[in-house]
Length: 163
Image (cartoon, rainbow, N blue to C red; front, side, top):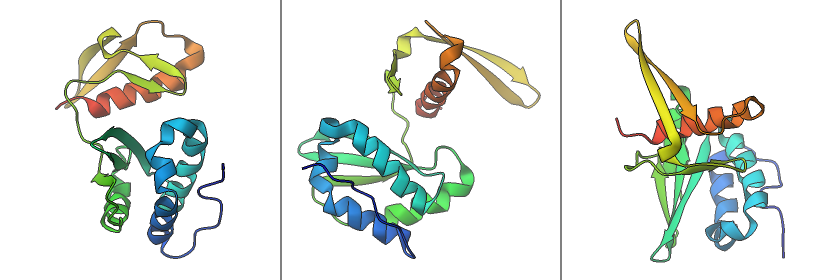
């Protein structure tokens, strides 16, 4: 049976509402690959009810458990919302909550919005920009029509890169 995970209005205590719905749909979310498109349409809507800058990531299933990463997408003002949602997470034996997207060496191949990019195919250029460093990424097969998609993939690569 297919049904919407998050289809009612959130009220006060949006973290509690989020986790209540997550818990009610735990098995479906654990196997999100079976209905990935629907879940990736619904879950961000509910996260945005907690804070408009929140994002998430599912880790792989390992020994019957899966990580659920709560991220601010690099937006500092959303850090308290990440902490609030993380700290209010229920204890579910098949889930591990992670606050903030961890860096993962080696950098993994990434996919976003139907576009797959191998980490080995990305080149970069670093340039001094005053007291900062500018970064330019080069993607094999880049097309201007996919500018926004490549921008998101570039951000994800940079977010994942070790310091």
